[in-house]
Image (cartoon, rainbow over all chains, first blue to last red; front, side, top):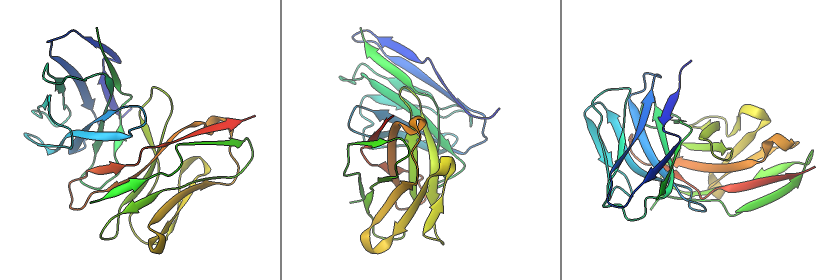
Length: 112
Length: 114
């Protein structure tokens, strides 16, 4: 069954710690995206990748990093430089630019 | 700059009543437009999309939307709402260029009264 898998569903970060959120897709999509969702603010784009080994900053990339070494995987690292990381993180993929995006079920990150 | 506005943060309708969720966009060319739905703690599910052609678009779960260029609107409608439609609804526009970037509205939360 094709889809996008995000893990873990819940994640806790200590002060000064980096954490990595996993996103895997088996849809054979070229493009992948990371969004941050805060209450009342809709979705904001963190990073996106249109092809393997290439990615671009979105609107709120500071304090985050990504890699795209494999077509099916697009992990997001929330670094200690991100001072307000508590949010719901959503990963998405699409066949190509401007095609509909398919979303995972999200990871909720909280601070200990 | 491109933007999407959903004027209604929260809407309550009775089960069986009709529904219209508003979406206005700012965009310099023919936009790609989407409506997504999100249940609490879940990801987003695509309801429908508009790329070109017929301005009345049919989607899943009995939803439809109409693209009106003159009003820069893409309102979502459903003739008869079911309790299971209670969720948050997001309108989105594709950014210029073939980047795949989407610009989302802030969402409208739909509550359905029995």
